[in-house]
Image 1 (cartoon, rainbow over the protein chains, first blue to last red):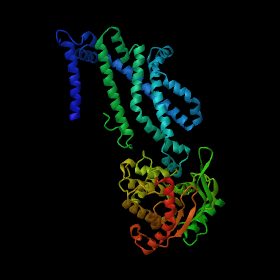
Image 2 (image 1 turned 180 degrees about the vertical axis):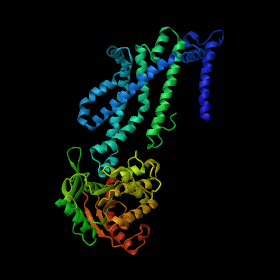
Image 3 (image 1 turned 30 degrees about the vertical axis):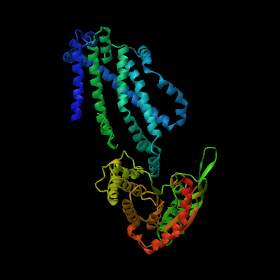
Image 4 (image 1 turned 180 degrees about the horizontal axis):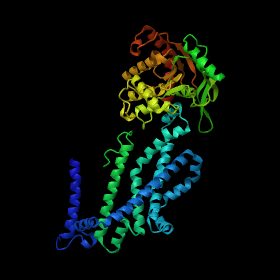
Length: 259
Length: 286
């Protein structure tokens, strides 16, 4: 209870400080010029206007769609490849240097190429998100399958499981738990991929909105876009936590005290 | 067909306590080793021959790190010996031993399955239909004293309760051979006694052949028909083989006060002590 109050207090204090510094002259000058920093009231008004006029929903919807597609495609790809590589050490050894190279590459530099290949619509953003999500899920599932507890594996064998049953009852749940442990990161990266893609060239989406505002030196618009984006990500993250708690009931205190 | 018949017959023979001619398990000059870095081979167990009769409860005792567990792994079919052969019901073992149930020292329940799912899984993978498997799993959980714990996940249970689930998980498949690798090692003294009595109680109805590995000589004598002592490793071998002539049913806590128990304990300990000291000197007590 006190923790919550404290959290709220910090937020209010920061916003109040921002408002004071941008509107009340101290010693004859404003410490933060509203042109560069906008004011909380302006930002709030802008956010309210977006929602009141309903223009924001299209952008939110586009970003959400891109992020969800990137997450789903990237996760499916990561799970399949992770499984395959972990069960086929030769394949893993062959592709290892190339995987590491690709993963080391900052994905932002790929964005213009994807725009060229997939156009300015949603798909170039989805692909950018996929390249981010895929590697997180891939490495986690790979690790999860590789590091199945040997005692559990021996036990499963002694209980008469064949290869297929081992996959279903041992490798799959084990890999899944690793995948879920990276869920927060991969959902975050799916959104990052979508927003960066939009920022670099799009006709809709939160990234596009922020980029447009920047282009017109509309600082209130930039901040408003950031506020909406932040709330959006927190909402997604809460949803992920709920799904996680549901699916991983068997885990000792899953992600407790995270929020 | 023919093989199946001999198997059935030998099982029947084995179950009559008087007949020790057809061993449920036979280790024939088994040597177990592992390749080491540098091309050498580490010999864990050397030239061990051991017959386990049908329905016989054998405890294998030895200092820490003497290769007791590797011996069980050979009988389980998880490990292939360098030399020698393991026979199960007169047939040389190849691959996993389907007649064996194995209770491991480490926690080996599936953490993502509830207690009942953990117990039922052995039947389900064998093709038994799910509702039937669950019904029998419920019965087995009750038998190990976990009625009402069906929907609990392993992490919400105590170490002793998890061992009970493990016992049910193994026994529901009705194995003819039960392998136990210091199964009660991590439990506290009271829980160990309770689990030991539970084990004897469950065993007395079916009388599987049991290989029970432990480093606790008291536990070994209290539970078993025969105590086999292994020397300290590497290249551990059998030092001695004692028959425990204490009538059943036994109570683990009470049997320890009997004259015969104390005599046997003194006799075996004299052999075991020097081996334990050797083991300590080599590993520095670790």
